[in-house]
Length: 281
Image (cartoon, rainbow, N blue to C red):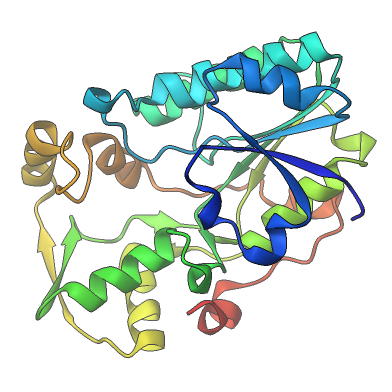
C-alpha cells in the first residue's frame, strides 16, 4: 500500500522472513518486553501494528502468556505514547473475553483493556483460526493437521468427539484488514471478530485436509477427561502435543455471529475455506 515498514524481530529469527520482504522493510532486533528497541524504532512512525501470539507457554524458559500477551503489549503501548505515535492496531484472538478460563485468553483480554484505556487511537482485531500460508512454512492450524496426518502411523488421534466447531478465516483477508485499518478512520475505537463465512467441526476440518493431502486415516477419539489430566501433568513439556489451555479453548469452540462487520467496514470479500484449501498446501 506504499507504507514504509519497520519490523521488530527477535534476533536470530530474521531467516524466517521471505527474501523478497527483507529488502523492503527495516529490521529492528529486540524483545517485546524490553522498551529500548521500541523507543528507537518508533521515532518517526505514524502507527503500530502489534501481533503478539504465543500458543503455549514454557515458564521454565521464561516464555509466558503474561510476558508476551500482556506485558509485551503494555511495553509497546507505553513506548508508542512516549514516541508520540497515536495509532495502534492490535491483533487479539477470537474468543478473548472478560472471565475467560484459559490463561491465553485472559492475558490477551487484559492487553485489550490496557490499550483501550491508553488514549491511543486503537483498533482491535480478533481473528479465528487462519488458513492460507501453509506453503510458506509458518505453522497454523491447517498445517498442524497436515503434519498430524503425515506422522500418524495408522490412525489419527482426536480429542473428545471432534464435534467442536471452528470458523476459519483466510490470512489474506486478515492482512488486508490490517492494511486498510491504517487509513480507515471509521475503524478507530472498534473491536472486530474476524471469522470466515463457514463453520466446520474438527472432524470435518481433518477430513478436508486429509482429502487435499491424500492421507486418509481412521480417527481414534481420546477421552477428553483423560487428556486434560495428562495435559495438567505434561503440558509444560514441548514433546506433549497439547496444553490444558488449548483443550479448554477447544471445548469452548471458536465461532462468532459478528464476523460480517469486519468485511463490511473494510470492503473485503471473504475467501471460503472449501474453495481455497487446495491452494494452501
